[in-house]
Image (tube, rainbow, N blue to C red; front, side, top):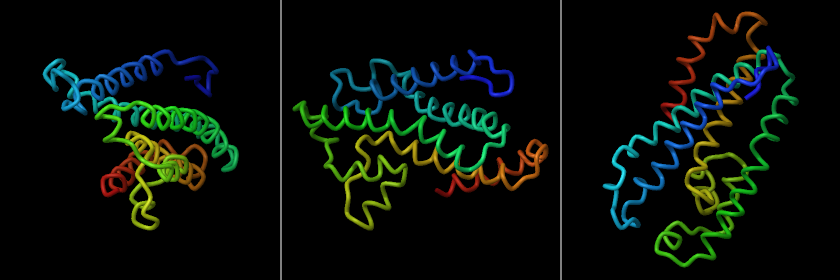
Length: 188
């Protein structure tokens, strides 16, 4: 992650991302679906805390977005940068996942397999509940995409606050903003 103020890479943030990735991967591999593992969840019991990696990703996002918004980019520029960062990887990964679960015939892939309608929620960064209740569509192509819907809501809220708060005052209102965001996301 590059610091937008100094222009140098923040290796510490990249290191935290690596820790978060490892935690999440270990959780999904050793804990999330124990019925498909010959050892169940007993092989790596410490991995049960891997869901904390998602929380760490959200903390990192808060820090990174604050740096991005410190430049006070315009709404269109901000949205395009976020979209350019997230959407291409999402499209590629969801296509790979879709093809994989429809090509491999295992109990696991049979259980998580969804139809093409799963791309609606996945590619729009929206709640799968909306698509299911309104159109009867499948959930996400991969259930872990729920985090992206939360991430995009956070981006929008943080950007809105940035543009509404006078320049140089964001730090003063940040604690209030944090409380508001926590209450909004606790409900959602």
